[in-house]
Image (tube, rainbow, N blue to C red; front, top):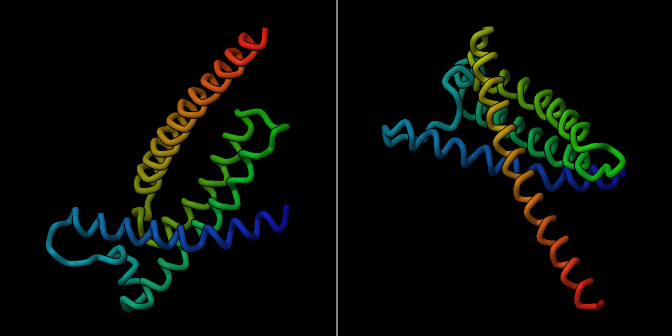
Amino acid sequence: MKKKLLVRALLGIPVGISIGFLITVLISAAIGDGAFHPVAPVLLERMGGELRAVALQTGLCALMGAGFAMASVIWELDSWSLARQSGVYFLAAAALVLPVAYLAGWMEPSLVGFLSYFGIFVAIFVAIWLSQYLIWRARIRKMNADVQKARNREE
């Protein structure tokens, strides 16, 4: 299990960095002023320079990538119910994302900022969870139908 966690973490690091970079490109495009905005202005100010801010944000994105990749083993615990897996994964994801978002300046450092960021996090989590659930439910139904067809042919 330790080896699996380590391998996943190492694979998750470049994925986290890549996703973080793509998000900065999308945000820069959405701002629409033709400039690249690699970090939140508050992080730039806090770090005292662009290089430091980008380095910190890159490290935080790497940490998130590793954390999400490691947390994915939760879905392989067959002895746990789907509700337990979902709840533990949600708590792990929230414990990872919320401090990183605060440190990176992605949320306003206030109760309103936290609650709005948390609300967005929950909405995204639920949307992804529900879409994955529906996809897997359809796949399982198809596999069961295929098994039933094979049984009917054997009879």
